[in-house]
Amino acid sequence: MLFTETPLKGAFVIDLEHRNDHRGFFARTFCAKEFEDHGLKPTVAQCNLSYNHKQGTLRGMHYQTPPAAETKLIRCTQGGIYDVIIDMRPDSPTYLVHFGIELTAENRRALYVPEMFAHGYQALTDGAEVIYQVGEFYTPGYERGLRYNDPFFKIEWPLPVTEISEKDQSWPLFETVMVGAQA
Image (cartoon, rainbow, N blue to C red; front, side):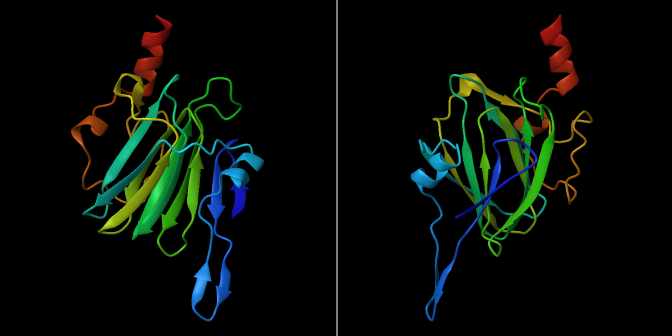
């Protein structure tokens, strides 16, 4: 695997290192030792699959807080997505900065998402399928979210949103949450 750190410390794009021959290729998609060698948490508590009927479907922006903070390894296995993460670690030099990348079945890239990063994506194709390896169990009491179109973050999604859950479009605006936290 080839690890490339994003501008957000601790978040990595992971490309496959192909071993090609006349049959095609072989590539490792996960190795706990290689993840540890790069300072990443290799724990996998759950694997989830998400399927999206329509291009433009948006899921996110989700994260969990300690003690249930999650790491994620995201890979698109069919079609394509535009994946976005936001650094929600208050002590980080990239606190509240976001990063986006296309993950497709063709480029076979994965995105490693550290704990305390909000995560979401938009389907770029009909039938986009995404697999997540998650480092912590889903714990509703620690779940948090940010609105995908929050003007504070200015995320530029590549397509108009065609489908979104009521929950995802109802997260409070970040500035509202911050004002409430400071009161």
